Structure formats: C-alpha cells, structure tokens
Length: 358
Length: 224
Image: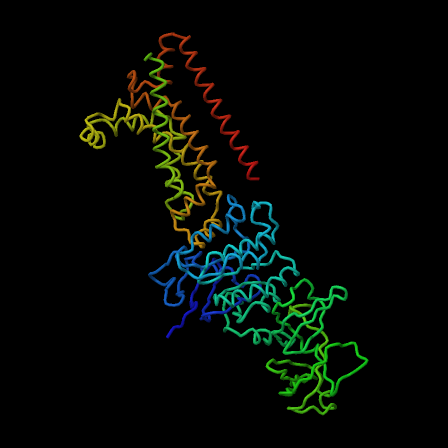
C-alpha cells in the first residue's frame, strides 16, 4: 500500500539529456536532492511540481494522483509552496503585498504556520513596507521563502532557497527553519549545492547524478557515502553560550559542552547539527593536560573497525545516545590496547556545520 | 448638427466602439499568442498582422463581398437586424475591428510576453486559478500595454479611409467619417474646410501620441 507523501517514477527527455527518477519520500521531514550541477535537480523539481508536464510516468502525493498517463492536476490546486532560487517576487506589490498574495489564497480552514512566526523567523518585519526592487538578493530570497510558507502548503519545495544569503545569516536561519518545518510536520523537498545547508536541514538525501536518482539515504549514510574519502559523525547539539571576545561558542551535546570557533551569529538556544571528521578526533586513555585540544569527552568504544588496505582503524563510540567515529592509525590502536566496551577520552579537535569545509 | 460636427461625432463613436470591442476580443487572442506552444501560432500571428501590410482597399473589397446582403454573413445580419452590413455603421465597426486588430493585439502580446513564465508559475503555485491569475498578476503588470493598445487602436480607427470608403461609402451621418469628409472637401476644392479637418486630425494624433510616449516614460521610470 502506498503511504502518504510524494511518490514518483518518471522519465523526461530534454534534448540529449534523459532524466530517470523514482522515489517514495517520507510523509514528513526534509528530503534534500543532492547532486552535481547538471545532474537534473531543477528539471526534477519542475516535473514534480507540475511546472513541466512533458514527461511520462507518474507523480502522486498521498492519495492524490498529480500526473499520470491521463491526469494532469493543475498546479494551482496542488498546494505546493515553492521558494524559487530566482525568487520571482511580484514587482507590482511591496513585500507585505507579496506575502498577502499568498495568504489570501489559502483555502479556509487549512492549517499552516502563523504569520508572526514566519515574519520573526525570516526577520521580515523591517522589510514589509519596502518595494521589492530595493531588496538585496538575500532579502529577496527571504521574502520568497516567507511567501511560500505563507501559502500554508501541503508540500514545500526549496530550490536553492538561501544561496544569496551570507554564511552567518544562513547559519542563523537554518536551525529556526528546521524547527518550524518540524513543528508543522510539513514535508519538504530541498535542493542546494551547499553541503552544509543539506547537513543542517535534511532528514534524508536523494542522490541524483547524470539524470538518475539513487536510493533515498538517511543523512548520516549520505555523509558516509563511499564517494567521500572522509568519514563524518553527526552530533545533535544546542548552542548554549556565545563569547564575542574570544569568538568561541559553547554547544551542548548530550550534557557535555563543546567549545568551538566559527559559530558566531547563531542565536543562543538554536539546535545545531555538528559535523565532526573522524580524522579530527583523537583518543587518550585518560584526561590529558597540557594539550591544545580543549574538548575532551569520555566515551565508550562500540566497535573497532580496521580499514583493509589502509593504515587506519575507525573506532565507533557511544556518547550517550549519539554516535561518534574516530579514525586513527592501526598501530596506534594496537599500542593503546583498545578494546570494545572500554571507556576512553575522545579529543575533538574541531567541529563545523559544513562537511565540505576544507 | 453641421456636416462637420456629425462627421466628428460619427468618427469618435466608431473609434470608441471599435476600441471597446477589440479590448474584449484582442485580450484573449493576445494572451493565447503570448502563451501558446501550438504550431499554429505563426499562422495566427500572420493573419493578425495581415491588415498592417495589405492595402486597405483589398480588405475593403473582400469585406464588401463577404458582408453584402446576398452573401451568407450579410444575409444573416439582414435577417437578424433588418439592416444591411454594407453601407451602414455596423458594417464600419466590423471593418474597423479587422483593420485595427493588429494595433490592439501586438502591444498586448508584447506586454504579456514581458511578464514571462516565471511570475505566472509563481502565482499559480501560490494557488491563483487562471482567471484570478490574469486579474491579480497579468492585468496590473501590463497596464502600460493596455494603454498603448487602446490609444493606438482608437487613433488608428479615426484615421482609416480606404476600408471605410469601400465598405461604408459616403453617407452623411451614417458612414461619412472624418477622413471621408476631408476627401469630399478636397474633391470639391473647399480647401478651407479641408485644412480645418486635416489640421485637427494632425493635432489630435500628435497630442495622443505624445500622451502615449509620456505615459511610457513615466511608467518605465516608475518601475525602473
């Protein structure tokens, strides 16, 4: 039986390019479509939304068939909120008018985000009276995202929604956006070139390469794809302190506070996903003094995984509910005499929001 | 009413009726031309533009043949209204509709095409059904196109001669428009009266065109 959520199996020929995509997306949660440019991400989004109808196959959302051999449901009845990369704001309305255009067309009785919530999250209040011609690229994208949310959609589609925003504002906005979408249980389809945006937003990732979709992956599995030479851990945390003098932030992960640089501008209280490279985690048998690494966390070894054909050994730890992976050399693992079940100190050299950080 | 006044009234009446009807007919046609992907589009576009290149007398000649009371259309009209289409005000309106069609359709089509698919897709995704979308997005974004189309159609209808002469003849108070009256005056060597009419038409055209360009400038600066 089909469950709710977006299901599709389609083929689209565009000149020499062939798009073959199929997937069943979960009923709620954020799915990022990830792939190199030219992989067909925008073509896929357009087909799924009904902006492009010249393809064969089937698209359904919950019980409703959006597209099959005989049926083409018009886009204005699909209730998809689209935040376009190029924003597509209406030039004959100011910012408030653009938002109202969406709000006015919400069918009576449909549940959606509160207007105040959207205005606060995207910091739109100072822009309301402005003409859309005077906005910067980042401001336009925020308005476009706000307008899409304002339409109380059943499905939200984000096409590079924050590409024109600077990193600081994007980092500030993503935790709140994620929390809002989670609270609304609004299924969301997201496309971005930014691996950090994917890492901060997505629950699942749909890989797309050369016009073909791969299997739907949990975010953690996407981070650990064989294509990457690095292994990553994904830790859910909450920002608890901001020290402007030192530029360091405190992030609470499972009751322990990691002190990290590079998170300035993010509001205290924001939920974050920290990405930690396995090679940035070292191991000590007991707490170490006289060391530049500040973050020393006691963890329990779950598994030792020597990597065949390399000098390395990956070690999975349990840190209360969360999983952390370290990559050290096999000879180091041997000389420390590590064993599964043993408690050691993980030395975390750095963590970031972005798996692609150099 | 003097002969001149009656010619002026008749002409303005014809131009106004033609412009109003062409707004109603030209808008959907221009919208279709601006948005369709049909392979018939070039053919329809060519037919719409035909009055621009054909001598008015050619159009007038065919209309005369189509509209005369022994032809099916003319016969139908006589049965419907008791009046003929040829040599009547109704006939002039029909002829003007055809003759001025491109002046309505082309500015509108250009205005609609300038809006582009992007904005339309955005409005549709926000739940705007086609008619709603047209009223809430397309109309306000193509005000300038509507103004230009309306003014050009009006002024062009005022100035037509060949088609009117062929279809309507020269019946005072019924089909004698300004340009026909002017022709009459010249034929009869009444140059003073001809001057008055001709200068009046030149002045009016200049005034209206200046208004069009002034509006265009003002709006583009406003939007820019």
